[in-house]
Image 1 (cartoon, rainbow, N blue to C red):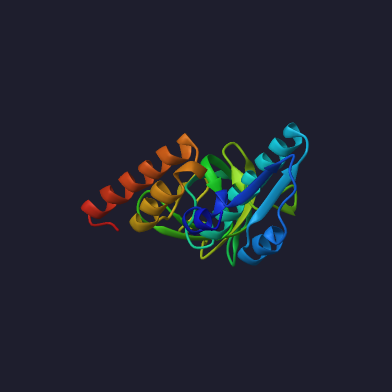
Image 2: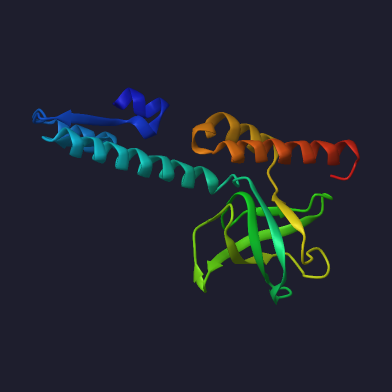
Length: 198
């Protein structure tokens, strides 16, 4: 488990079915940050493993997305402007991907819009919005009427380096639609660069 932790932390656990752990194993596991999952009933053990893997993957994704934004494509909903600036607060629909706080936004023209400060649903902050969700977002750096307009389609502003990291290291954590959206964002940025607009 320790060797696995060095290469893929998500899978670094010890699974024990219908056995007791040896003396000192639990202390060593704690010292190395390795989880021990054990049960005498196989179905309950499988449920524990599934829960552990889900939580470990989500934790890894949260760590990485503190530095790299996830792919998202949103539309600013007409007639849902709540504040024009400092920060701009508007209603949006997530057309593709996942929107999380901290995501920088870019217009297809190459115009940088701002950064998502907070996402709210029914007046309460939420950690993310997914495809099909309609939410309110506060965007620092955006001013409605200048660099942000009702009906605008916006994308996560992801660097080429970050796109490659997402495709290589986080491929298993992203849906097929999110991987396609990464390709769309990459193609848009290449087009902007070739036209000298980025």
